Length: 430
Image 1 (tube, helix red, strand yellow):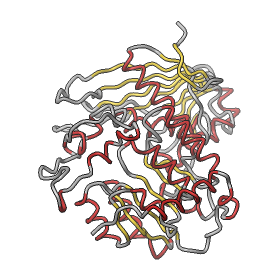
Image 2: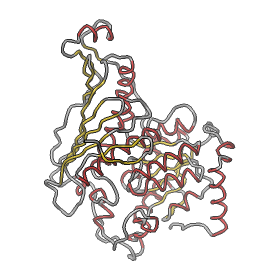
Image 3: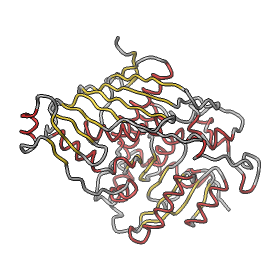
Image 4: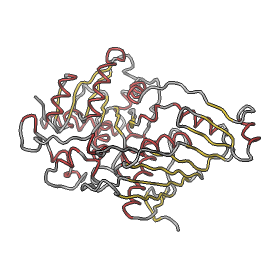
């Protein structure tokens, strides 16, 4: 039905291999793109809704893109059995058995957020290319540790955020660099949801029969899921709400900030600052739990403001209580950029002559967009050496620092600053 980890001898071999990767030996022996004409063999960790979506995508594209899922891993036996039935291959409750497989070239991580960083680092150490769903991590130290591991690994590293497959943000960056709206000074964006039964309940159903020590298909390895042994979350008794609806609880994620606003912030950083993003200067956050008072400890209404050292500010909003949102706008001295439907620019105030000079004599313009690969397709292209990852570790880390600063600012009810030299949180200047 499923396999556990290998024996001690096999584990020692795996650790030796990982030590070699850290030293750069295997990276030098197997450069990115070395398997360009071969099948890319994926291992999937996390077989919930997102994991199943990845399986379906790979099954649809398998022959055309020469890719297959070789192994799957999940702590919940029912999900593991379903995933293995869909794609075949080997199955592991403990993901480390999957990482030990030499038959795997790349790993896709679709687990709860508190596991992202540790799994990503271990996968890199095992010599695998990595696609991890957003967010990059569940804390700033974790994010910085992943960045270090990815820089040293020479593997392809991608953080999944489908917004980055939208060409509008990349064309926006080109237009901004060309000066088409003048000096950017601010922007705003939102990502809101509103369901009769809140998103984090309606889309995350509890399997009432499942749990630890249930046996068979209902079995959950609760201790492994928590990760308390590694300091990933507090050790508590099994709680089905925490397992199936983890986005409601602070130990495992940052709520709407890390779930929804990560998409928008990564996209706007790409548009304004470029593909590696930009670290914040100062962050503040407001909001609260105004409607969904069901025992959760993450807010249903969240507003954050980020000031950046290149002298622009961004206002972001996410709420689960009303899905009317802010328009996606970037404001420059000469003109305004609209990203809601396509990509449009128009002049502002008395700056018509300057805007026209930068836009071929026009007072407004629509910038043509091109189709881009989705994040999985881009990941495969990057492994084959024909593309750069849309969501690289530099962008992911800079995005994560702003998001996590906002989460922490909300919890402390204050503004926080980022010490760029020391790479640590400091109190914001008054």
